[in-house]
Image (tube, rainbow, N blue to C red; front, side, top):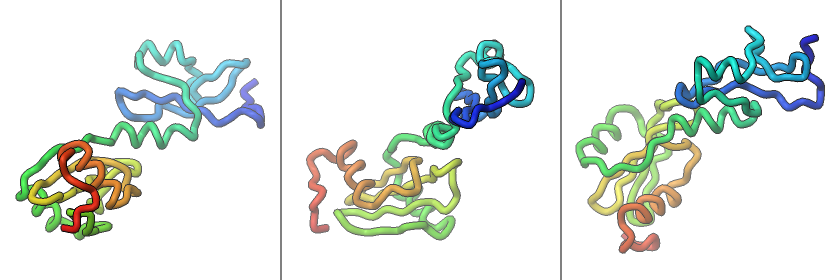
Length: 153
């Protein structure tokens, strides 16, 4: 009998190495299996050793994590090129720098984010919901430990 009890949280089979959901999960005879082919986690791991069974509420978080990229220092030319390629989103100034986000998403809720702090330029891929002050603080903490977040410039 193929039934999801009403109390069971929706589940999915996720493959981190592919940053993708393989299939939704359903319960069959008390065991979680893929919805289309009734594969167990054990059989799915023969194809994808890193496959995991996760709650559906974690799927978007896992997908976003797969698209995130850490801060790197970039050239002024790259910064200006990205500023002029598409209209910037959430362009802000203050706290000694400026930031903007690309209107094209990398995937999920993740987009390219650019920061100028003083005469230095930085890029990362992260959630589009991050705020300017947090972005400047991140850059300072990672690259400019001797600089102050409360700079008047």
